[in-house]
Length: 303
Image (cartoon, rainbow, N blue to C red; front, side, top):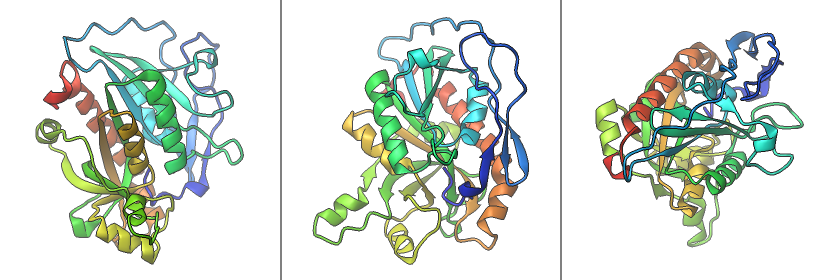
């Protein structure tokens, strides 16, 4: 999720989400964001999807995509014709609002998960806590070969970021876990290298940069100081948390972030976010689609 996004002003239309069961036709669903209506997830055909063709020996077969917001995930759900897992097939604890969409694409089985809506406030459950919980439950149940954490992010022009740029994160770290005690301070930052994917970077022409993660939309002076120490090019609210969980399971994870607004720029965040949301979400959709196409038929070591 983009850390500059005005989430507290986001509201969603009502309606049904796509499932793999036949349902009566219902009005199309929309997402309303500061007066703008965006298309929501369109139900895919109700027919059951066939099993994915068997991948070659050692090839990647199961990919888990972890995202934060419905607006970010909508294009990919539609692109890959994913269906929502019904309640009786849920892999999540009873009462959890987390959502999973799944389907087959080429020789890959794709699962896309999100924390869903907060039960009290009805907004996307963004941030590190929700991201780590849904990532943990999904990895434990689905045992993916590869994780992709995809979403929007704020970028820093002083580090070469521009609106619409798509970055692969080479490193991740937290910028708001300050524990001024020896060794605990390093634990708080949690700096770690991500899974190296040099062939993806080269073939798909992504930019490379460091990602810094925090749970606040604004940037306090202390946060800014830590972001500078982290040498970050982009900042979000989930990446480092997903990386932490992926490391627990020793599962390789790739972090792809599309820049919606410039944190150290002149435009107000809300204005720039709204101006660029649709085009940048489309750029993220294209980037992840190209990545999935590239991954198909390959081994982890080929990435």
